[in-house]
Length: 77
Figure (spheres, rainbow, N blue to C red):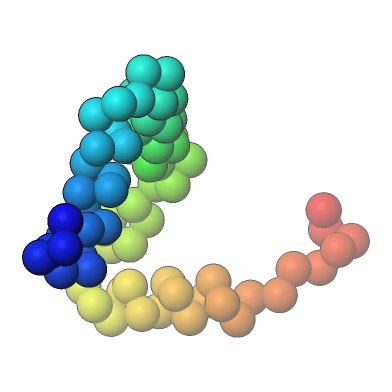
């Protein structure tokens, strides 16, 4: 252990820790599944690719400018 560099000792620390985990592996699997659902599946339903449907860069720029500068009248809601 004395001849290892600091990054090597850190790597060994985490490697040995993950090898000895039992419940932790299941929890990491649940975390990874949750991240996949959040960023992979929910993105398809709640964040449509509006700019991808527009043709040119000019149309995209106009759309963004319109969305940023349009004010909402609270009485209309």
